[in-house]
Length: 267
Ligand SMILES: [Zn+2]
Image 1 (cartoon, helix red, strand yellow):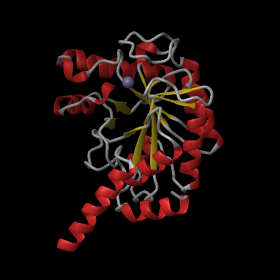
Image 2 (cartoon, rainbow, N blue to C red):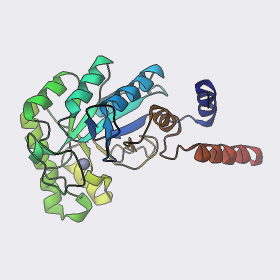
Image 3 (cartoon, rainbow, N blue to C red):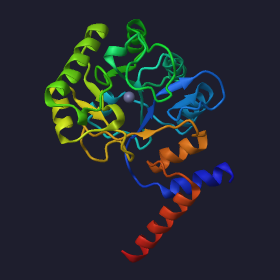
């Protein structure tokens, strides 16, 4: 489908919605699509940032996103990275080249080390170390917490949950020399108990992996994000940005457009 026609259809499919959140993990060297679903190649990542730039997106950190009092432009994307893979250094450089910012959610026990949580095919080797995190922060990036041990918070008791939240916050604050206010739930799992504990531990926001527009729930402890997968092309990313959804096959877009058309005719 010609690019201009694609953009025309997408613009007319989109409703007013506010910021979108994007979640990345690993950004691997080279052009080939990585095998791990949560990794993108450096080449893919650069192309995706070029889409954001070409479409005029502003890319605040999570704290900037939530503290600004005026509304954000319709084209606002909050870019985030979970876990702290060492290959994210290159991703940080690509962002800097374009004057963009992002937020990193770091597992405090894995700083500079090989992660200890179950291996699901993630990249081998150590994670970002303390000096790399400080350099990224100095470059305008925000560093948040992703617990001490990458635990599923819904599975642990209140005491362990509070340790995971407060100990990771303190450890990262000691590295960075300033407050760490932002959090992302490992595996995206949370419930009311988790959200209350995150708030009680002194954080001002928490991200999930629920799809949809970032601030749809109007709750800073349930910020939604779209996952960027290894198979996402620049065109698929553009459709995700327009639709706030992972369902970006043309059949899905045609189906939702048809439903909206029918609804408009009957209301
Ligand atoms: Zn994670």
